[in-house]
Image 1 (cartoon, one colour):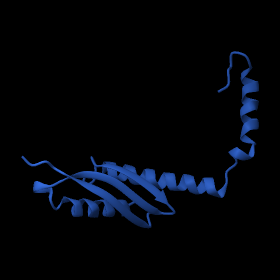
Image 2 (cartoon, rainbow, N blue to C red; image 1 turned 90 degrees about the horizontal axis):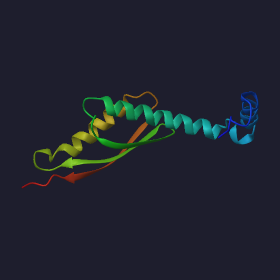
Image 3 (cartoon, rainbow, N blue to C red; image 1 turned 135 degrees about the horizontal axis):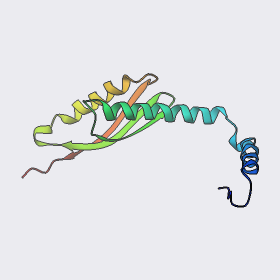
Image 4 (tube, rainbow, N blue to C red; image 1 turned 90 degrees about the vertical axis):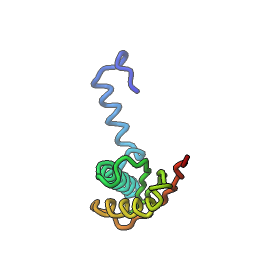
Length: 116
């Protein structure tokens, strides 16, 4: 944070430009890979959140070198007993529609619907 009450905008700009020249702020192959993985995971999340077969599911999505890992849980039981297989297949198919996805791992837990 830069307190502009005590220094000029020009000085504040020079401080920021100087900081950006430091090694900690330089682009590296590692940071580029992290950004690429983050972008791919975000694109998959958006696709899953907006697709008719997968929207509404509470999921976490991670990416590493084109490999996508999806984790989460959903309700099953009663009339939904076959739902886990169907949902996993829907997740896999929708995820593979995203450009850059090489492989999909799905780790989901089904939570039984209490039947009365």
